[in-house]
Image (cartoon, rainbow, N blue to C red; front, side):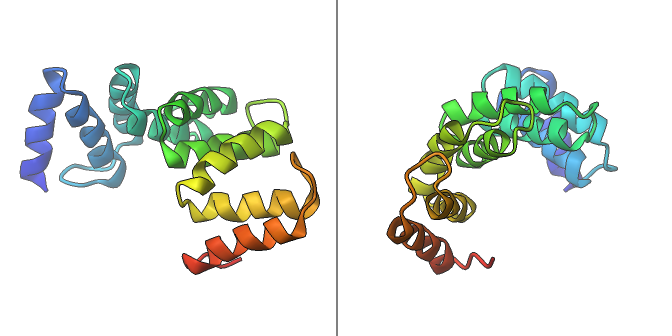
Length: 162
């Protein structure tokens, strides 16, 4: 791990976006280096600013959890949106949750459903479950118990456990 960290470090300092992201992961997880969430967030941000969706998602997580940065739900939602618009499934679910709960955004079930649907259709079990929940209670969509069961089943088939 230390050798990988050194390689990532050299490439990241030369502007390699994937290396910057991977260096962020190393710092966040303590792989080959002492855990340092501040350094992790800084490297995620460098990669996120260059448009790497994975880094945008993880930077959003940093802002949501206050890891390495001051907790800021609005900034988290902004970074989730950038990653979600690039097709990042985890970010699509996270952005849907922001809209559903009103964290960093106005509560908006229709927007939540929009993002849950995108992630659910790509096989994200968490999104499938929440999409089913929205159908069950008619939040952002017309209440439809058959569709709710359909999405709950898809989530369950992937091992999703309520």
